[in-house]
Length: 485
Image (cartoon, rainbow, N blue to C red):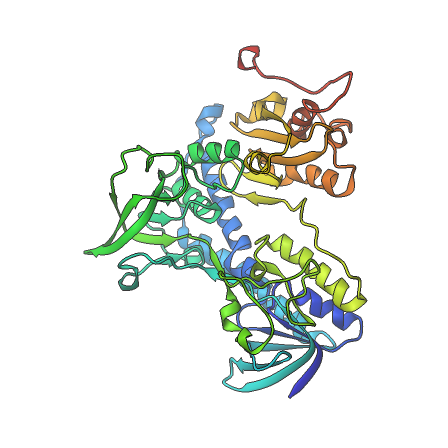
């Protein structure tokens, strides 16, 4: 048996804990069955954003005529796009694996681990060998995988998951995407921008329904430029028709306000395409760990139960990332790795605080959000004030000719409760708000009082917060036509 101070299951964000332990002079092990870096590097965030960058470029070229520019897109070398992205991200994963293998006091096991008791794991190595590994402390960070929904006929048909769709050698001529969340919306935008005939099916009235309603509505309207959007529907049946796939979609029984479907007809529809792509969420990989051999408890969805310090129900077993389920984002997992490292290595008794945890969606328009939505505040019965401004309130927003918006939610005393952005560079613009909420006083004045560069898109954020700030004098820009106010 190989014995260590810390054993980390998962070579993504969890590997930061192993690295920190080794730097403290402890013996650490990392067990990873796939590429190093977790799903983000090779099967999620990075390759998908590389694809979406290509979509943004194509979209700019196609809209050049609106700006008085004569530009045309001569063609798309789809295989070259995906192979280049594949080689780039897997080279990064290989470098990360080599870094762990070269590190002192860290042992990398390439294989799948499962518990045989609360501290011991059997590791099925890729070379066919099996090793037993024991740690005084264990960190669970095995991530998640795409969910396969129970659709009639699906087991007999071929389909793509969101991971499969990243490295296709050929671009589909037509595609049905099932799932109206952020993954489905991003992939719908990508394929639609590159002229695949996309039908996008979502259960709720709007796409990305977890966002503030102002943002969800804007994204839904925008995606209709790239896809045939069927909101208020769910896939009920899949069947093959020659070399085509037919998806029967029925009105959803979800808690939406519509009578069913984007046309309100309430009738089933048949959607035919070359390929079917499922983007219906992700499920934690905890079912691979034989947690029944431990005292680690999970909920009905398989997410690990943890306390505020990220310790599980089994002493000295900790968890972070997608398997915790609260914030399924890479940056959240990295933050949680910091918390676990502090608690395990320094006995810091540090608790997770994700009240100012941002996230972004890389559709067109780009979306970013932090804090609560208006619906969440209403459901909680909280008193709040709101301000929503268009991007063209600022001169650069007007120049970019975007339909973007910034929405701010604050309590009557000015405390920032939430901010939601849809428009160019939203994922960057939100960071000013995150810093104010996390490190400032957390009030609208933290954003409205500092000087903002002119003319820059940050003026849009400035203008939105200025509307709620209690200041006697304002120089916030307002380039809107007076008839729009």
